[in-house]
Length: 237
Image 1 (tube, rainbow, N blue to C red):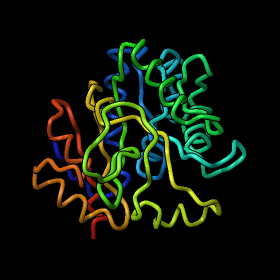
Image 2 (image 1 turned 135 degrees about the vertical axis):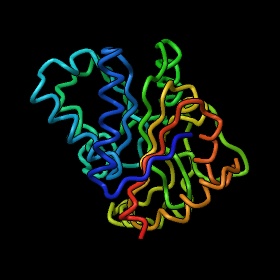
Image 3 (image 1 turned 90 degrees about the vertical axis):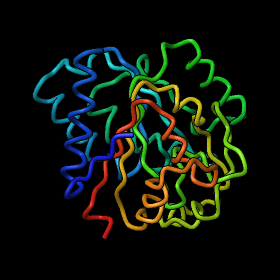
């Protein structure tokens, strides 16, 4: 695990962008796993700038969505889909034939997870997986639990996740999410974990102890051979 301490969010995003662009230069058609939320938003903005200045750079890149809430409708601006479409896909002009995504209004979330897992199994695997960390140490929607699930699955949301400010604003009672499993994340060739935002310091401190524990899902990343943890020191207080 390579730990990078950056002075602020901008420097964190810039370093993440440098890592991503370097890999795309080597493998233009790589599979990029995109997380929603604020943590990777700076990365996506810089990728969009690169697209404007070097049109064609992302023309072969493929994208898979990391997770999605269960219980929202397609029109909701709180979906991971909306977030990734607005911040990344539209700006990079990535069409549906290069995008793998959990359906927001899936009739059967369990079957939807099986469909996404099949898509992954038939691909060459994820090349770059972008992650944020939850206040409780979750990665994607792999929540603290007695055991962690390796493959795409429907996750029960943890009380700490449900109490987060964003979910409280949704206006819909959420209890579940569809997500890639820790095995899918660990199979990625490179993982970039951004640590930024209010309330993340405790999870970061526990992670940096280097002890692998299921009540801190991010800690499994210690077993991955190519992880970059990029910390926004300014937001850590």
